[in-house]
Amino acid sequence: MDFLTGIIIIIIVFVLAFKSVKILRPYEKAVVERFGKYQRTVTSGLAFIIPFIEEIRKVDLREQVVDVPPQEVITKDNTVVVVDCVIFYEVTDPFNAVYNVVNFYQAITKLAQTNLRNIIGDLELDQTLTSREMINAQLREVLDEATDKWGTRVVRVEIQKIEPPKDIVDAMSKQMKAERMKRANILDAEGYRQSEITKAEGDKQAAILDAEGKAEAIKKVADANKYQEIAIAEGQARAIMDVYNAIHEGGPTNDLIAIKYLEALEKIADGNSTKIFLPTEVSGILGSIGGIAELFNNDDFNEKEIEAESSSRNQVRKFMEKAKEQSKENP
Image (cartoon, rainbow, N blue to C red; front, side, top):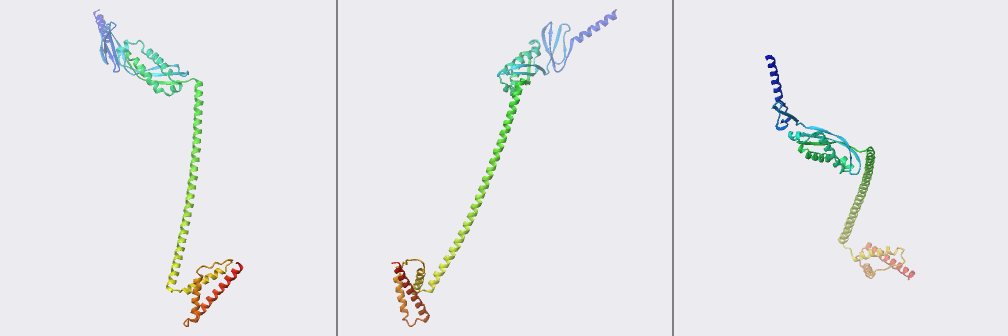
């Protein structure tokens, strides 16, 4: 009997020891209650409590996920969309997490759904589809502020999907297709325009180069003609200078000049003109002719010079006779 009592005592002691020692893992904290009243908060490791008097309630501090069920939300432009999201949170205060909320999962779900309706209800459909980051940020801020008294912190919120009705999706698909066709047409037109501009620029450049080439050729031809005329003028100038120098070096007399003058007048008289204008210098020339006549009386004049003077006198006489005839014909 004493042996049985000893065994029972040992079992009771073992049970009491098991009940009094609790092990908390690194990601856990716990609150200890004594007769239903909060006593203390214990951290990871060994925690000792009084069996049957104190009770321990563990709290997981790891980041956890709440999947908010899909719900229909009406946007600002009266379009019904189906939206669901995921909430990531972690417990920061075990006391508030245990005593300030009964069912945290249900509370955070309903809170997320309500605020999601409010946020998306202020946006149009296009904004809703393109503003997920903004929706996530606003919803996280609202949830984090609301759950602060629950001893939790909302880490982030992610919108999983925003699904418009099928007819809206079809209309958006048609709109997107039309927009893509518009872009394609614009690109084609822009390409054609750029091609025509490039072609026109090429034609313009070719015309400019052709005109420049012709201008350069004309310039070179003009330069060549100029050089040619300059060379001819310089040659004529040299010839005149040579003749001038030869005349002055030869020392011609007035009689010789008069004879050359009369020869020129004879050539003029041989033309088809009906009128002959005698220059005022004829009297001077005739005087020279008189001087020539006196040369015939000079004994020192050689026969060749006499023949030349005789020929000149004959030319003068012929010229005068021809002039008289023409004056009679054309009084």
